[in-house]
Image (cartoon, rainbow, N blue to C red; front, side):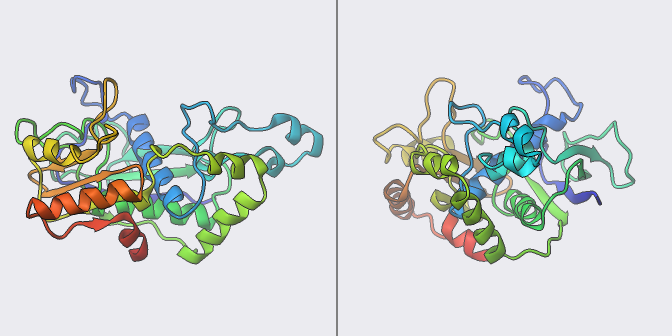
Length: 291
């Protein structure tokens, strides 16, 4: 099994360490968790199901089914695509992740400044399908083209510096197409009553790429962000104690992005942005069409 890799360059510092940013050591778990978040949003945006791995409906490998039939696929039948790739209770996932410099050296990798080139390696411990490779590659593309990587990206400019912006230098390749992946996601739903049932009752607050919005020419200061999230009477976009706002803005990168809980809220956001004189915003559905 060949390793998969992407090469990235920091446009701003990328935070992967402790909450107070005292640690300069790259925390692989922080990078892995960020990539998984985008992977899950992409799966949902393409009509598939991805659980909340910290929630009550999180996936679990069915060890009993595996023992009875002796087939790993039986144990994975009710496991969502994200958990199959990244892991869940009873299942370690399909790869180990390693962060290196461009020469392959591990350790002393600095992501706390712009202009640092680094490699994210996915080292397979189980076979990674072409559909999973496609989803990984597109998640990395989304991060670089529209989103952000790592933690503390909710801090609002201009009081705080931008964090988490990266450039995709060398992408990951896959032989699968978007149509292949859509069919594969549908097949997984059809094969599992559990997944189909959880999809039907999936909470609207789970990030779904269809209900994201992105702008690559403007940024929002704190006042503008507060004005924007005020269009949501439910308070979802504003966040609450323990939860961040659902809008992320970057002054140096001149971009912002965010997500809503559905079509109606997304329409309100787009209308408000136009009222604020901000044009050029694209929706997650439009981004999916680019894939």
